[in-house]
Amino acid sequence: MTHEKSGATATLDPAAAQEPVAAKPRPRRQPPYYVVLLDDDDHTYEYVIEMLGKLFGHGWGKAFLMAHEVDSTGRVIVETTTLERAELKRDQIHAYGADWRLERSKGSMRASIEPAPDD
Image 1 (cartoon, rainbow, N blue to C red):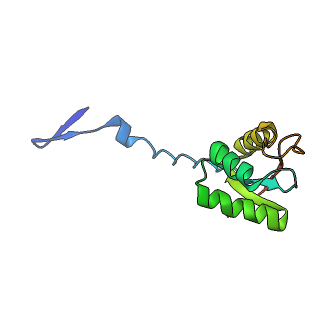
Image 2: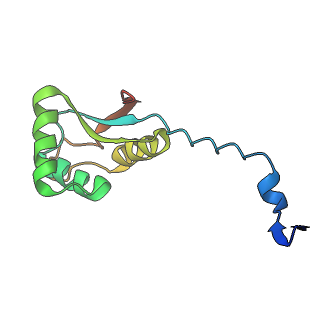
Image 3: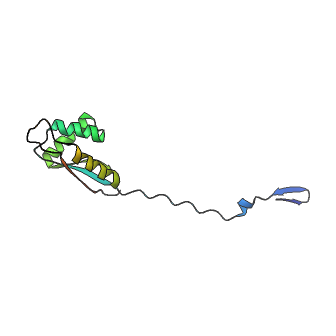
């Protein structure tokens, strides 16, 4: 729309005349969860290192430190992620299979998920 006044031309933009649009709400982050690997005596360090590399992409050094921690303390947090992914990763640990290096190994390691502090 154009309005002329004393020789000057002014352009009015109808969109600009509307009230300001409220800012979009920011999406909420999903609460974090830990994937916790639990110790047992039926799997070798090599098994744990291999599994952590294949399932989580951890390098040899990081996986070795995690294997040592689970052996020493009985548990180790292997990933912090969303609930959906934590459930998937726990299930992948449970499905990984026995350690062929030990005859007494009859199945996969155990793992759990638990809520992580939300910083």
